[in-house]
Length: 134
Length: 390
Image 1 (tube, each protein chain N blue to C red):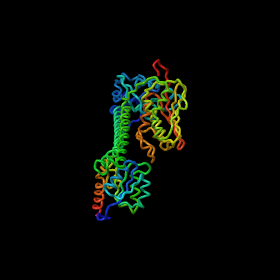
Image 2: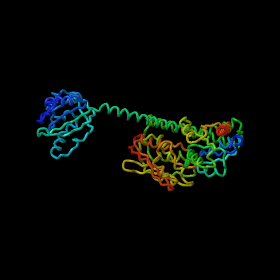
Image 3: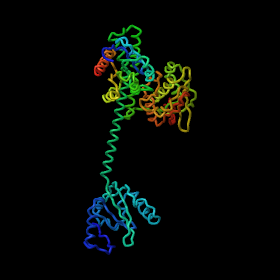
Image 4: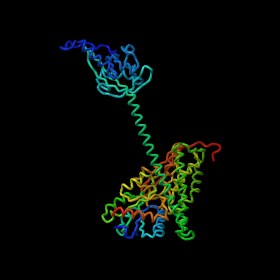
């Protein structure tokens, strides 16, 4: 995949219902993405094969399977091992961000995020990721 | 100075005389850094090297012929003679041949940690003991400094983790508030639309959650710095529980359950801060309401247990998962659940409640069985009524 491919599909996994709602408006209505929202890691794992996202956006702390566990499972799937995974976290400390990047996250967006610019932020991450691969 | 050891070997070698050998031995004993003390089988000091004089602060003439127990503080001093007698009659070794840490007593009355190794010997048919003593004050001090540094690092880690968790917990509702308002202010969503109403509602709800969280964090800070004020007064239990049910009726209505006072002996009194105890009751009752099935009854009871009273809040809800029960009272903990009813809590309520009850010299405990329900109970000391008791 390269940057000439249109970037449209994001899967977002988040357990906080209110954050899911505002992020859905931000990514669908404001940024125009084709968005699949899942409320926990297990649902994300079930849906990824059907939805085939180009980028996965993950909350870190979730009951059951958390974000880092889901990242690991996705990276083990040959079909999705190469798609960028971005964390959205309220744990904004630099060491936490570094830890998530070491796990294989492409980038980390800290909460609170700006819903008006979230889409563009994610597009830039996606573009940088593919440019770095070329 | 070390007194000369008796000569019990008549042989000499070709290169040195007996006196030369004695001089060498004496030089060794006099210059080693550890204290060397020899005692008779009656416990009387026979020889002491300069290091031992230095360690204990005595001169040689102040020690020779004295009982070695003078170098030990009580209770070791009193036990020493008994220990020696016991060894001589039974052969049971407690120190001999075994190094151990003991406490020494200096001439100036100060005590210090001492490493002691005792060996037994026979000289001209007479049983004697040699004690090698080493002042380990500095080592102990270094060990204590190390322990204290480790403790400080651990405390700092706990503080850092707490701050990171608080930051996460505050940012979560703040994310919903800020993003909802930015969508409206940024013009993405019109305020007078169904989505606009929904976003305002999200912002409002999360503001309440944020406020609750801030109040709980302030309470924890007060508890941990021991600055929480308690205005205790003697109150009657039954009207207090009736008020608790009345004040928390909103929780019951919201979750479609009922609170019922099943049993309460009357008049029984307790000496408590009624506002703080009401905070505990509200926490227990709201938890019970959140996790109960609709139309169920949450039972409030009080029963006497000797000089105590047990106030219990009992629900027949989902219970607490077994693997979570040991962490129920920890800060920022909630059982893993996808049920959004759990989201309305801060994960601090039970920690605060337990601390409040303990500040009243009481206990807060629970029994819970998954899918059958939970009972949280407060045990408090009964009090005598006063003239002003309500």
